[in-house]
Image 1 (cartoon, helix red, strand yellow):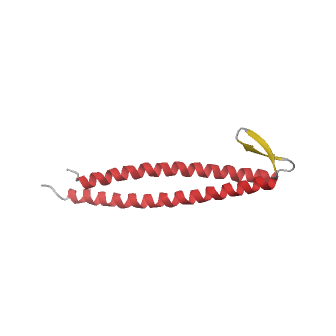
Image 2: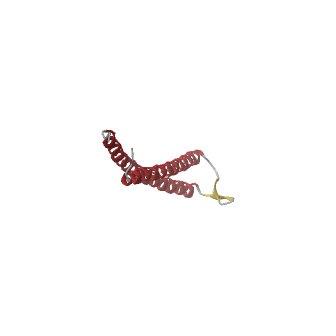
Image 3: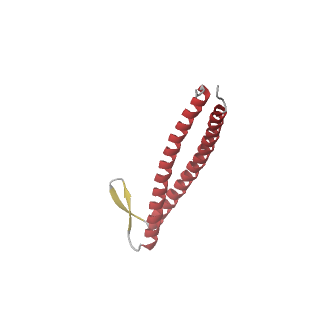
Length: 116
């Protein structure tokens, strides 16, 4: 069975979409990990009494609990937005991949009936 140029291009598109999905999954895991760290830091901050410190580059500096809470809140909001965006892009890629895969499968099914 010979595969048409259009079908080959669709298969290549599927491979690229799969690579993009893998990239998104890696990014999503990274953001989820960062979000978990921020949530854990926030929980520890809520338990803490007395002096609190924040890591800035290679040093640790004393800061107010309120400033660190605000910083963690902002960080969590940004990470949640990034995760939401990644999930939307991931869903769109999956839908596109499913559509192309369906087209390719129809192409193959069309050739199955041909026994020239």
